[in-house]
Image 1 (cartoon, helix red, strand yellow):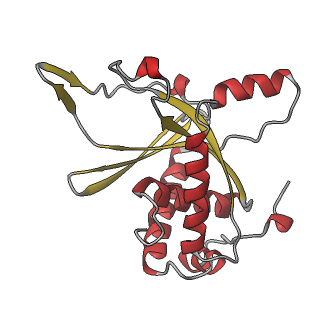
Image 2 (spheres, helix red, strand yellow; image 1 turned 180 degrees about the vertical axis):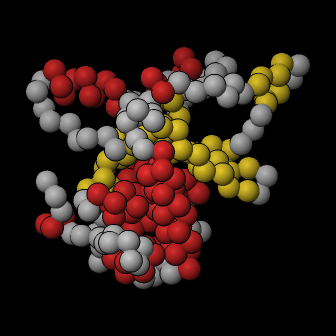
Amino acid sequence: RRQTGATFYMSRLAVLALVIAAETNNPDVVLGTYATNRRRMATRSMLGFFSNPVTLRLRCDPAVTFRNWLVTVRDIVVEAAAHSELPYDELFRHFTQSRIPVPYLTAFCSASQERNSWRFADLEMELLREQHLAHMPSGFDFRCTQGNGKERFEVLFDAGIYDPAAVREFADRFLVLLASVSRQPDFPLRQIVSESFAGRGRQMTSAAGARG
């Protein structure tokens, strides 16, 4: 990760896209995330959290190594952040009104530092833990948290849409693949996925062989 200049979030996002590509047998994965920014002068002196939902279209090439794939993901995330003033919800509304096809959003993936409270001078703020599925565009939110030297992964999903047992299996496969790419970053993606999911019928396909 350090050699590629990728962040903790980018590396986990790259692995998540691989798992989804293998599960769906489709290398063209579209994920949503949040870009935080204060690009406008009017917001720089304000207290609060400013972010826009953006989409990341990640096209996995099974022939490249994970290290090269991570560089690709890094570049896509950086480019998306540079254009985060165009949030997903506004683009989606504009495209649908104009009858322009919009790529299907698979899931939202977010990352943060785990903190229970913030203190500004004599003002203390506490983090509210309550979550609302109605705020999740896809009904499936995969979260990576890093804090106190530990990593924590959470999946928030709508049980009316997704089977809890299948979600658990999906999360387990993510952890298996994460361990595999950590040991073998210079192996081709196809080989990493094949060895990680041996006996489970998962494989990487090229864009030409993907399902439409």
